[in-house]
Image (tube, rainbow, N blue to C red):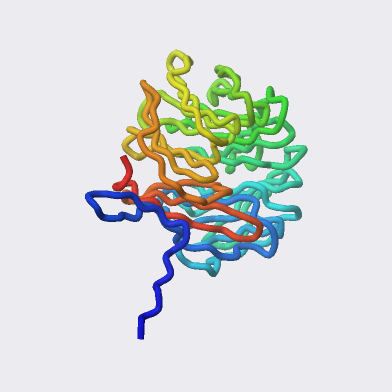
Length: 320
């Protein structure tokens, strides 16, 4: 009897190399992560082995990537969880909720160690300081706040956006925080002076992603307006602009800093700059991509759709 046809993994990516077909991307897993819609997720950048998700069910769930049962399911928020992130050691998670409250979770103890209030509307972005006991949050109240965990409170409130702050991101040296808004505006704040350092010319749509270069004074901003802009942080001049076919959902510099990886709803693209050019494009139908991380030559992309989370792998060694 003829053996049964082996079902091809859906949505896998192949390209021709010397006559052979080489798979460049595949879906590692898809699983039901919450009892209702998943609103946010973050991959731990230290290990790329853990992921945290937040949902309409008011829970924060911790996952080992590759497994479909949570390590922890943390209940305690009074409203939907809308943003989550790890600290650098992957020992603590901060989560922001629709009610404007932030909670700091100790993962070893599986309990809340801080509840912080001050935002007047939904908290939609969070980022941990690269070192030190601080984190930043952005809210639909149009404000960016800097929180001191030891002092248990807000130490700076940065105003100036006309709509919600969709991205808050610390620079690698920890001296600046960059806020990107749903108004398309990009503002760079000096943490030491506690004031606005520079406002960069706005995007034509909401800012969706911000990435600092790992070792150069360069930052990339991505937007729903389908562009990525590269900025020189010494002169604050625009270095280059890359134009996508659809809005930018997530992006990441390679560890070496020689390329920027951007994720849209259907593609991973590899960009170089000066001059701006797309060096490669990989067809990955991850749709509602929410985060990217690199580990040992592989790119992990995580997406959420309704109550499900999908994790995808792209082999960067097979990309240009």
